[in-house]
Length: 284
Image: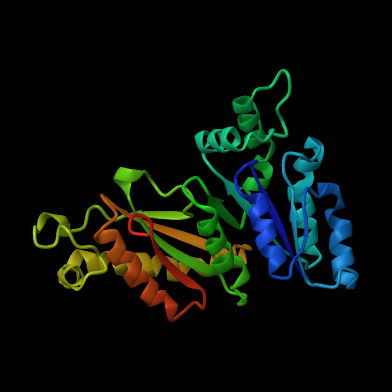
C-alpha cells in the first residue's frame, strides 16, 4: 500500500497533481479531513479500496486542530508499516496573488475581515507542520501546467523503484537561488569559460566548454567532493524516509559551470541509482 498526501497553499497546483495521479490509476480524494487518514489507511490495507495506490489532498480547508495532528498521524501510520509520502506544493506569495486575481477564484480563508494577501500568509502558517514533513517539495512559481505534469510523472508515477530519486538541477545565481532544492552547491569559485570569448556564447553542453572544464584540476576536485558527500549521506537520507532529493548546482549565469557539473554528476550517479534526472533551469 502507498498513501500519498498532497498538500500546499491554495493555487499552488494541488488539484492538478491529483488529476494526474487519478489518470494513472490512483484512488484520489480531495480535501480529506485529516482525522480520517487512519481509517482510510486501514480500508486500503484491507483491500476495500481496490487499489494499493491512494492519494489525498489535505490543506487549509481542514479544521486547524486536525492539521496540527497530521505529523503524529503520519508517524503512527509509519509505525504500522504503511508506506506514506508527503508532497508539498507552493509558490511565492506574489505568484499566488496573481493566480487568484486572474482566475477570480475565492481563497478558502478569505472573509469580510481577511483579505487575499492576509489569507495567503495565514495559510502558510497553518500548513507549516505538514510542509516540514514533506518528502518532496515542489515550487511551482515559474512552472506551467505542462512543467508540473512532467515533474509529477517523472518523480512520482514513473519511479517504480524503492530507492531514492535523485535530481541534479543547474541554475544561475543572478536569476535567484533554486528555491526547491534540498542541497545547493555554489560552483562560482571554479574557472569560468565565460571569460574565453570563443566559449562565451556556448553552454556546458557544448564540446568546447566540456573540454575546457575537463582540463581544470579544481573542477575535478569539486566533482569528487560533491560525489563523495552524496555517496556517504544519501543512504542516511533514504533511511530517514526521504524518497526524493534535489541537488542544486549554481554558478553566476547558469550557462557553463553549473550545467557541466550537473551533467557529470548525473552520469556518475546514473550507474548507482535507478531514478536520476538532470535539469538546467536557465537552459530548459
